[in-house]
Amino acid sequence: MIMTNWDELRQVAIDAMKMAYVPYSGFPVGAAGQREDGQIFSGCNVENAGYGVTLCAECGMISDLVKAGGGKLAAFLCVNGNEELTSPCGRCRQLLWEHGTATTQIMLPEGIISLPELLPYGFGVSDLAQVERK
Image 1 (cartoon, rainbow, N blue to C red):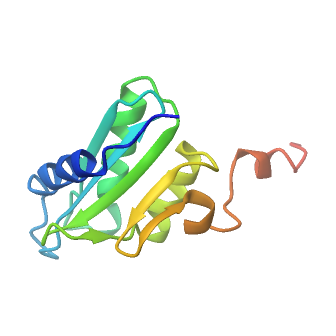
Image 2: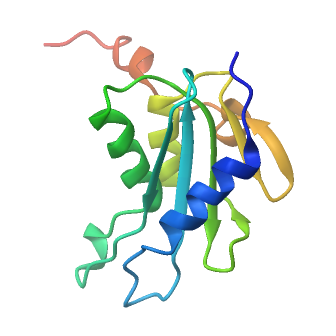
């Protein structure tokens, strides 16, 4: 298992947060994740006047991961505009579930937890396989 340098991961998230486009909420977020091979990915939130199409920082980070060939996340954190750790929203927890594992570590203001602790009873590809396609 890769050792996560949480300080480095946090700095990557802070750097991404500083690039956020948030003219409506004024709430910038930066996200950073580390793939199982150690490579780091990041993203920032990008708002839109049609609020429903706003992209969270986690979306950008997952897009960066997929663009680089995919893989599973070993570690993740996100920061707010005060450079403080923050929790990912519900929608983004689902994105993390899709691209993480049971051992993915999530750094929250309260400390490090596993992905299943962040999203108990997460919905994934195995749930899709439970229904026969017609």
